[in-house]
Length: 336
Image 1 (cartoon, rainbow, N blue to C red):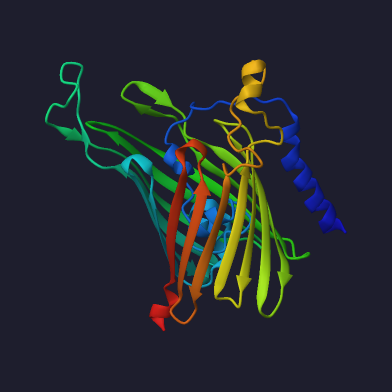
Image 2 (cartoon, rainbow, N blue to C red):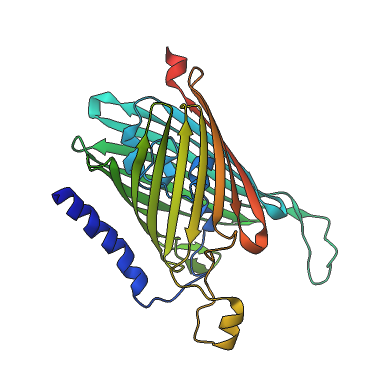
């Protein structure tokens, strides 16, 4: 009963901020690529992954959950965005039994194809091209403190480049993971992208810092299938609070089906309603009954080879939709 009370208090704490008045600060933070979900599995579940974090993508979602992995594992993700944008993520981690911990490394890159340089005097091109790119390279460590509680941290080098101009800095993530032992409920919390302001040319800007609180539960566990449910609350420094909901159905430990939804606040108003009343907030990104913020996915597991292949589709409103692919590999199979 005490555990039930603790879980209830934590859930209430996560929901209370949505009842308070808050102002969207859209566009006030830079390096937005740090928000891009890196795993097709997590994206298929609406990115409600803070309290799941049981594969190599925990490097991104919650370093505190890395302790769940008992063998070396690597992951690779690729996204082909509209307008010629490419996103690549590579991560790997390895348990350290002597210290009861896990270490990991990761690289995230967002880059463009060559773009034609234009000037007011030469609007059709100068004959030169340029590119833009973002890069984050990080190292992570997770330590088990008790049989149910672990804490992890990531330190990241950050770089942004546009033509001949660059900006560099650092950021950090700190996460915790707690297994309640009651009804198979796990609790995860993480602070992402904490660090000093960066400066591009002469303009300073903050990192896209956020606080996340999540719950997950193995709702059904049968010999031939199981059902995982997850939710989380996100408080970013440059937008309204977000709520993520996700589900994963695993059949015969070979095939997974996933469904997710990202919701930007509980109250939603249409654009027409905002035009009629200027007091309404227009920055409601994910309406409840539209494809914005909705996602689904599937995964194929090949235990004999230690390979997982995942796919996810996510709706991005006026930007259309994005297809994501991830490949995971348990390196322990190579060591046998």
